[in-house]
Structure formats: C-alpha cells, structure tokens
Amino acid sequence: DSEARERGDLAGIRVLVTAGGTREPIDPVRYLGNRSSGRQGIAIAVAAADRGAEVVLLAANVDGEVLAEVAQDPAVRIVPVSTTAELDSTAHAAAKGARVVVMAAAVADYRVAEVADRKIRKEDAPGEAPTLTLVENPDILVSLVRERQDNQVIVGFAAETVDDEDELLERGRRKLARKGVDLLAVNAVGWNEGFESHENDVRVLDIDGDVVAAVAGSKREVADALLDAVRDELDLADS
Ligand code: CTP
Ligand code: CA
Image 1: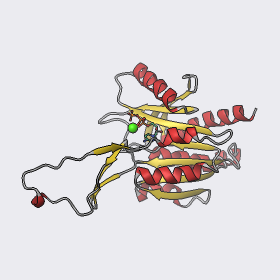
Image 2: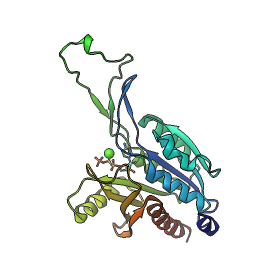
Image 3: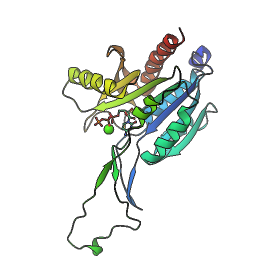
Image 4: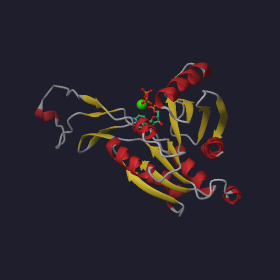
C-alpha cells in the first residue's frame, strides 16, 4: 500500500510484533497448540512496515503460506519461534530496542511438565490412557509491561468466548487492568468465529477502558485502525 508507506507516520519507529500461536511439545511428534493462524499479527507487521516502521516479527508456528505475505519485505525481520519459552526469551530481547510492542500471538497458557523424549506408544501401557500433567507458563505480556522501556507503548490482544458485546468489553477491561497494557484489542471467538479467517471484528480499549476503535473488516483494516490508536499513544507519550 504505497499511499500508507508515503504517509510514513511510523517512520523510524521500531515495532515488535508477535504472531501465531505457541506450541508445547508432549513428545517428539505431538504438541498442545491453538487455532491462531497468525494472519492478524502478520497484517499488523505489514501495515506497520508500510507506514515506515522497522519491524521485528516473532512468528510462532505461522504457516509458510501466511508468512509469504511479509517474507519479501525488507522492513520486516522475521524470527520463527515455536514454544512459549522461545517466544518469551526472544520477545524480551527484541523488546529492548522497540518503541512499540504488539503481542498478537496466542500464547499457550500451560506446558507439559515432563516432555517424553521418545514417542508415547500405546504398546508401552496397553489400555491405559496417559495423564498429562501441565504447568503454567510465564505471562510474557505481564513481564514485558513490568520491564517496560521509556515511553514504550505495549499492546495486548484478547480473543474471548462471550455471549454479547457487553460481556466482551467487560472481560476486555478486566484483562487490560490485569495486564497493565496501554491498549488491548478484543474480539469474540467461537467454534465458527474468529479463526482461519481473513476478516476480523475488533474493539480497541485504552487504559481507561474506553473504546478508541471499533472495526470490522479485513485484517489489514483492523491492523491500520489499531496502528492509528498506537500512533495516538505515541503522540501522547511524546507530548
Ligand atoms: N499472553 C502472554 N503470555 C501468556 C498468556 C498470554 O503474553 N502466558 C498475552 C497474549 O499474547 C495476549 C494477552 O496476553 O496479548 C492476552 O492473552 P489471553 O490468553 O487472552 O490472556 P490470559 O491472561 O492467558 O487469560 P485467559 O485465561 O483468558 O486465557
Ligand atoms: Ca490465555
């Protein structure tokens, strides 16, 4: 989008975007994962680059086909990651030089306590279903907020299963307060809603819990609306 690139309202700004979903290994051939395609995060990376930003994209298990959209963009440095632990360490390292952090990745909340180093075989315990013991993963976003750099703008995402818009906003406000982020983008998800799609329907909440953007459209349109809200936060921080 050359018009936006010309607008350049994020020129020289370093933006860290995380996208996709982390996976936690069970054994060498199996994992616990989630349905995030990474498309919304990729759209944010592309939009930020188009607006002049220098982007680091931490891509957690994003399909090559989805990544192809940014692979040729010289303004986007892609770092592939898989587990939450990998995303945690790369995100902390990359956040040090970033003015803006957008945590669009779906992070596995739990990992398997003891990863088997060989494939779990039915033959080894016939008729007995194994029990997986899980342990909680660190909250990357909370720790990034705790270590926030000067004037850094930090954005979270929340996909919620809700009955209506009021519940979406209420859950969003609670999560925003719990995480301490500057902006939280919330959207409703369900069995048939919000995944593997090229469209999204998002509300962006600011620190006061006010809805600063409401946008239903392509993931690119959502990305630009979110970056408009980020731009406003940067202006506030600079003023
Ligand atoms: N997040 C994170 N580290 C985690 C879990 C979540 O950084 N271990 C980030 C996500 O990238 C997202 C935001 O926190 O930007 C909200 O994620 P979400 O899963 O909605 O929040 P949780 O605190 O895990 O709450 P829930 O129990 O609703 O899953
Ligand atoms: Ca979670």
